[in-house]
Image (cartoon, rainbow, N blue to C red; front, side, top):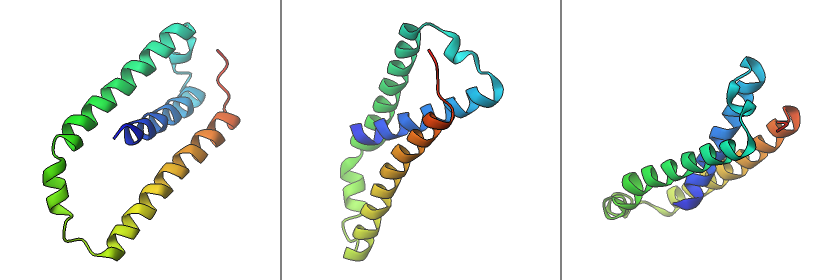
Length: 102
């Protein structure tokens, strides 16, 4: 659950960097401590949303996917890993193309 929240947070940062590059979003004009605070609050918000939406309902989700065949399980894991790796590659490319100078 934490890793899913972390990946979602990285995707939000990627979108923020791209928006900042094209629209001069005032987010990066704050001091570094304020940026860290806003990012920490965003990460905690994502963790709490995922906790209440996924972790609290894990038994219902487990029951829903209990009869899933092996091919669908493998496909689900492959898609999850592609999402994770793609997110890290995307943030790397975006951060190299549009560096944020604090």
